[in-house]
Image 1 (cartoon, rainbow, N blue to C red):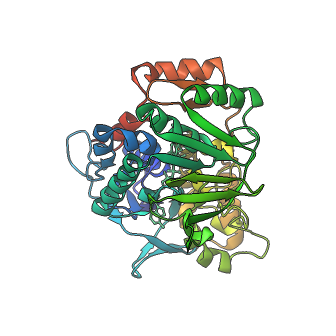
Image 2 (image 1 turned 30 degrees about the vertical axis):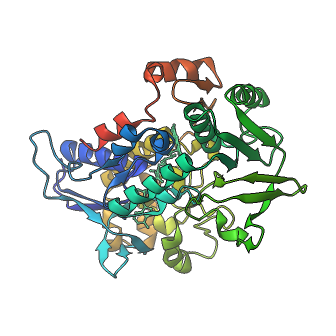
Length: 417
Ligand SMILES: Cc1cc2nc3c(=O)[nH]c(=O)nc-3n(C[C@H](O)[C@H](O)[C@H](O)COP(=O)(O)OP(=O)(O)OC[C@H]3O[C@@H](n4cnc5c(N)ncnc54)[C@H](O)[C@@H]3O)c2cc1C
């Protein structure tokens, strides 16, 4: 046991962040009882983004998607450790030894874990930090789906496929269309046969697939031109509209839902990038992800004590799953422990050379990215498609047969709800 006071800040209270907090709590029980753990999260509540698809068509499920953080730090006897705390605030800037929150509050750290994930601009509900507003936005999204007679989804990745199938299943009389730029569904990282099997199942469910068509503009009505660049960020609006594709095809519908990609939340990295080494590119210029080493540390020798985990980091797209975010968080905390064991938190009292040597001595372990990725995509409430037999078996073992819960039970458990 060490009696050192060590401050660890975790930013982002979702899969990666909450898992990191749990691992740190375990570490405080075993070896570092004076570990101060702070979770900084911009939302007042946990929002179960992973279940956003199901909540849109299932009110009971939707009601359970907003969870409180208040029990996160409760120990077995129902007491909150005074060394740990939840801070509801938005991270504005990261510096080498402290972070600055919106409003100017500074918090110093020995180790920092950035787990700020990504924003799905196409899901307006994910852009809200306040629970009441978040619920209201979600309600408006559900109302829009109810009101629309014909819905066009733009983007045939897992999210577009998932939502369109849920809606086609629940509302068989609605016209449900899905446009995708590639000739096959999904991205290149999934096989053609998986895509074509998904396509035939979707067609059977009544989803009209418009493949090989890139949507380039939308007009709300004949006399009302929308600013195309802002459409993907808008609230979902039901009105007659015509969508035009690159090839000139016109598609009419009364609700367009963009299910195209996501953007990592990394604006706060500018402060660190500005003072960083010339050769260290902390944030990828194209994708916006935080560049990490295989140890999940930032790519700058001065930032050996800063880790980025989950959707926010530069690991491959096949890592952008809740399950992987949790694995990475566990790995990062294990590596932080190695640094702690070498007393790297004393680095401010060391010369830069000694600090670098200490970081090396810790012999951090590289994270192994998922190989032979198992993919399961739900097509409606009780149907799903898997890319391998193992994926199918695992999904079944996790309860797919009872109707997919999109890991809501797991989130409840992590938050002690
Ligand atoms: C519709 C949908 C369905 C999905 N289905 C599945 C599935 O079935 N299985 C699966 O494994 N994965 C699924 N995923 C992917 C999964 O949800 C993500 O991979 C996972 O949420 C990533 O977790 P994370 O902790 O890295 O980031 P996020 O979940 O994005 O969380 C980031 C957190 O950081 C907070 N934050 C952001 N910026 C700041 C800031 N500046 N200051 C403070 N806090 C901040 C956010 O509020 C948020 O709470 C799905 C995703 C979507 C959108």
